[in-house]
Image: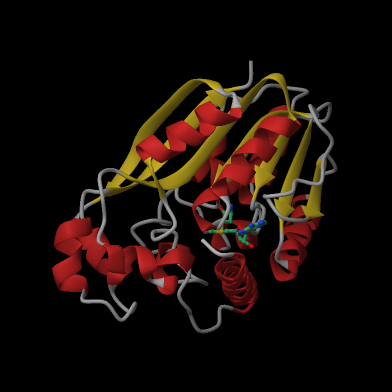
Amino acid sequence: MSTAEAGDIKSTVRERYGKAALQAVSGGAKSSCCGGSCGGNADHPITSNLYSATETATLPAEAVLASLGCGNPTALAELHEGEVVLDLGSGGGIDVLLSAQRVGPTGKAYGLDMTDEMLELARANQRKAGVQNVEFLKGDIEAIPLPDASVDVIISNCVVNLSADKRKVITEAYRVLKPGGRFAVSDVVIRGEVPEEVRRSMELWVGCVAGALTEQEFHGLLWEAGFQDIGLEPTRIYEFEDAKAFLSGTGLDADVLAREVGGRVMGAFIRARKP
Ligand SMILES: C[S@@+](CC[C@H](N)C(=O)[O-])C[C@H]1O[C@@H](n2cnc3c(N)ncnc32)[C@H](O)[C@@H]1O
C-alpha cells in the first residue's frame, strides 16, 4: 500500500469515528462504521451483545452506547490487581473503564486513540465513572506514545484491522510490553479468502472487514515481532445473514457477495506473550 493510500485510510477512519463519537453523544443519524453503522449498535452482527449485564451495570450508559468493538477483551485477558493495561484505539473508553476495575487502584489503564471526538467522549465517561486510575492519550497505534517495556497487558477491540500498517502496530505493541507482557486483543479476522472487491471497499475498511488480517497473517506478524505462545480463538463467526447485513449499503451486491463472505469473517480473540 502506498503512503498516500495509507494516509487516505487514516483520515477517512478518523473522520468516520469522529462522527461516531458525536452520534454516540447526540443519538444523531447513522453513518457507516465498524459493524456497519455508527451511533447505535443494538442490531449489528459485529458490535451487538458483547458485554454481560453485570459488566454494563457498572459503567456510565454513554460508555456502553459508544461501544464499537467486536469482542470483550478484558473478559478474556485475565487482568490482575496492580497491572498496567493499554487499550489500542480506546474509542468511548468501555474497555479502559472495565480494565481499571480489574487492575484496581494500584494499577493503571491507558486508552490510546487518534480521534479528538472519541478522546473527549472517553474523558467525559471517565468523569462520569469517577475513576482515577485511567488516562486517555492522544496518538497513533502505529507510534505508541509510551516508553519501552512499560505495559503489562495490551488490549484492543476491533482496531488493528483499521490500521494501514499492521506490522508497525504489532512491533509497537511488542516494544511497549514488559518482558512476560501479554497481547490480548479482539479483532475481526478472515478465515480463507474474501473477494477482491470486498478488500477494495473503503466502506468495508471503515466497517472493520476489508482491512482484517487472515488468521495466518495475524499469526505471522506476531511471530515476526518476537511474540510467543500465540493463539487465535474465534468468538463469533459471521454467517450469511450477518454478512448480508454488513455488506448492505456499501454499494456492492450484498446478496451475491454474502455467499462468498459468510462464514469466512469472524470476531476472534488473539493472545500472545512477549518472552
Ligand atoms: C471500531 S472503533 C473501536 C473503539 C473501542 N475499542 C470500542 O470497542 O468501542 C475504532 C477506534 O479506534 C480508533 N483508531 C482507528 N485507527 C487508529 C489508529 N491508527 N491510531 C489510533 N486510533 C485509531 C478510532 O478513532 C476509534 O475510536
